[in-house]
Length: 107
Image (cartoon, rainbow, N blue to C red; front, side, top):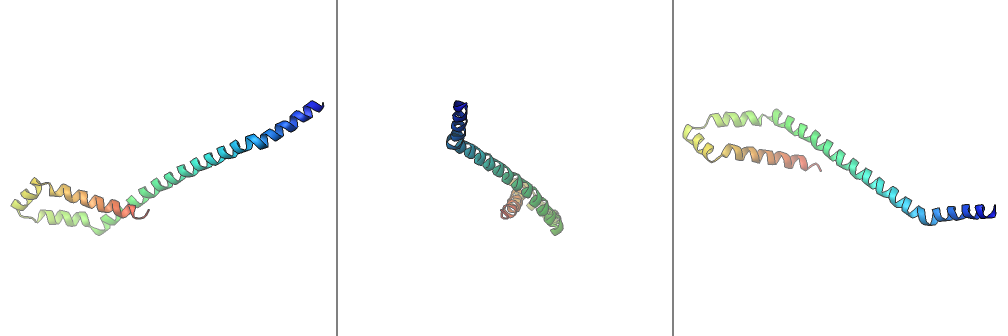
């Protein structure tokens, strides 16, 4: 009977002196993983939200319609020159980059 009692006390002592540190370390590691995962999911959701806002702003401002009307009003030789040197693609890249910079500025 005395040995069982001492074994129980030794088990309790071992839990608090050896197992507690590992337990607390594992708990904090799991909490950190959960918080990091949560943070990334929030960032992804906010990027999707702000992309919708930025797209709506472009539609409301009428930038696409303005560029289309400006493009159609160009002279044929100028239009051929711009098309040859891929100016429309460059403008698309610049507008996309500015829109992306606008979205990422919120973070």
